[in-house]
Length: 480
Ligand code: NDP
Image 1 (cartoon, helix red, strand yellow):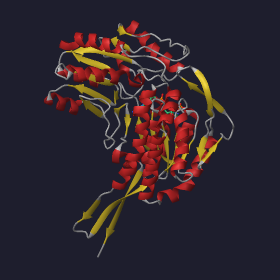
Image 2 (cartoon, rainbow, N blue to C red; image 1 turned 45 degrees about the vertical axis):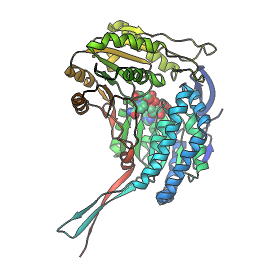
Image 3 (cartoon, rainbow, N blue to C red; image 1 turned 90 degrees about the vertical axis):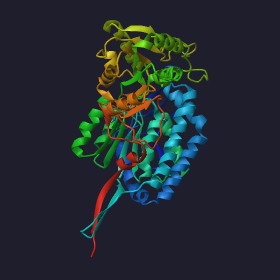
Image 4 (cartoon, protein in one colour; image 1 turned 180 degrees about the vertical axis):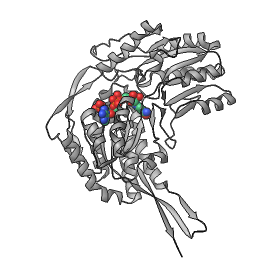
């Protein structure tokens, strides 16, 4: 299977004809190749985008909206094909790709196809001066979208859809580890009637073409989702060029459980928020804090539920936990489990690799629960990004809040309680971009999405994304 770049509406081999191998994590085997693009490919993508911009930015809102809706429909029309491709490329259970990843990719396009028809700007009358101000929001031009491997099509489209809706032309790069569904999307975009050059997808390595996109003087804004270290590097490169930046980075999210919550709902959701997508979601609740008086009960019940999760072949309907993304990532996650031994953590469940019949080389790991006693430990401070959670007890609201905020990250938090006062106090004081109360991962696409502290800067989602992808200009008209 050969993946190609998508530039100016054409599928193209990389100019220097260099290729990389694409792995199926479930089997630990190469199953295809994709371009190891270079600066020359990025140049060609930028040129195509630049040429397409005058027409796309002047295409009516109705027409843009219609094309984005077509893309959404075609994604749903190809749901099974895309879900299988995503599962194979990423190792995630097919059921997850079918129920979450692919429908959400379609939703991203449908949402922004509608949102752009409702997007408006402000007007300010300068009373006493016979003057009227209005804010003109214009598309930026050529923008760069760089996305990670954990939710490949879901996050790729989360950036591209608002960028296109707002009238920009895009140079996009999916993660080198999951190039497949972006490639399929290119075909869908052509079929949906997206004009040539409006979306260009360059495949390859982050530190070469990702960097080339960030550095390119004609790319005026970068929307990036990925690790905090990479985000810092991107900021360092782009800031002196005064580019607009939206950085959605890592997380170490607290899941705070009080005894007065709806226990059964909490337990079921906590299993999901800990291990969905092999724990490789930036929003997973990886630090679980439980009120002391239900701690022992929670511990037993949680272990019992987690023990029922089925680790195995992602293609099987019954699989709950598929393969981790790569051998290197598996080793990294495993090394954190080893840290538990030196840090005095208590492995309550899991911790070992799983050998799946006929898939012996796949990257499987047991869901792992580690009891810790000090929030300062590395297990509670560093992002592991795998099927590993820690649990720890607390006594008071103040202690829970302080533990939750004691991390350099600030992406999301989950709170389980039925106490209204506590809900409001925590909602106000948690240092995160999102607080879920008595739920997890319930996403309304109109809401702002992003993190505080080392989890990033800027917000995407809803009109926030359309604001990011447009340049506001103040027009002041004085009249006689
Ligand atoms: P990385 O930061 O390694 O990579 C993200 C993307 O950036 C990839 O496409 C990568 O390419 C590219 N990249 C790497 N180096 C550069 C560079 N120097 N310049 C430009 N682009 C570059 O993250 P992962 O792919 O490993 O994703 C996991 C991380 O993403 C986790 O930390 C997770 O928390 C975070 N994340 C955050 C989310 C949020 O919304 N806040 C959501 C989902 C994930 P390549 O793959 O080729 O290296």
